[in-house]
Amino acid sequence: MSVLNKIAFYQNRRDEVPNQELARELAATKDRGGVSEIAEKTLPAVNAGNKAEFIQVLENRWEDLTASQTTRLKKVIKTAQMREGRPTFR
Image (cartoon, rainbow, N blue to C red; front, top):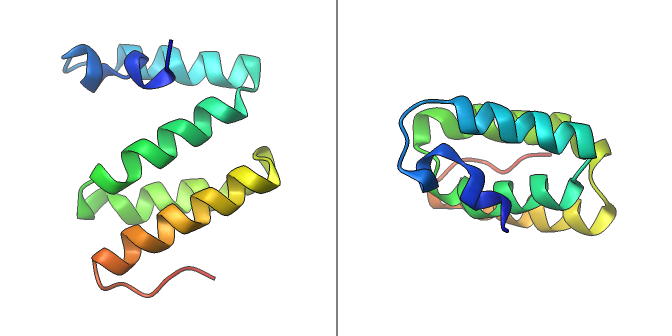
């Protein structure tokens, strides 16, 4: 099952319990692919008010990702920032 299906939004839930459980699961299993999948699929939909914080969290966790995952996420972040007319990250 895709990790996206475990996110509260995709379960039509308004509480954070599924998200917290997923975060614990991803951390416990060191599921880099799951983290990457969530970031790639959800970043474009994150509202502008939260997008900068979301990007900062990702940038602080580069070391947890493989080189190819980091490259893909940098492209997703750059695209998201360009859509908002913001300068891209370093």
